[in-house]
Image (tube, rainbow, N blue to C red; front, side):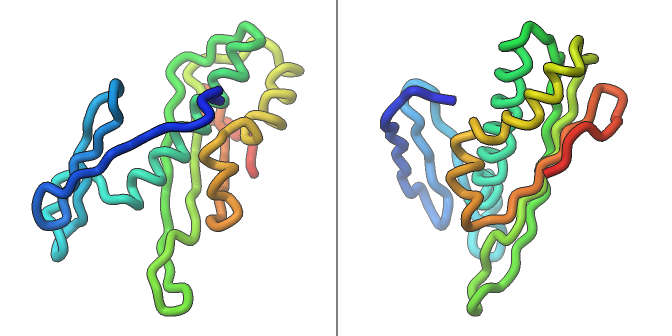
Length: 149
């Protein structure tokens, strides 16, 4: 969903396991590991990855619907992550992303086309999908299930 061929993010250790993450013109955030390593003064890397996947999918769905002059309203995204030990090391094994539209979509034919394609345009999801099982559901504004992958 981006035409930028490269990007840069800078991290600086502040104390313990707390980092300042500098996104340049987009601003800064802090990350930290939860106790007992850190103080939990920000999202940890697992949370940041999960947020990036959900954000990218929500933006891709939004773009695809707007492309066909639909106003999906407030898209709500939630992501559930599962950690498991693989070869003795803790890894993110699964992310389950749930997206819900805020408004009714005008054309069902367009919706079917959008739902069959939007995940393929999500740079983050497609980049990490080979190593992490990513499930996606989309619900309409009333909570009816429209898409499962």
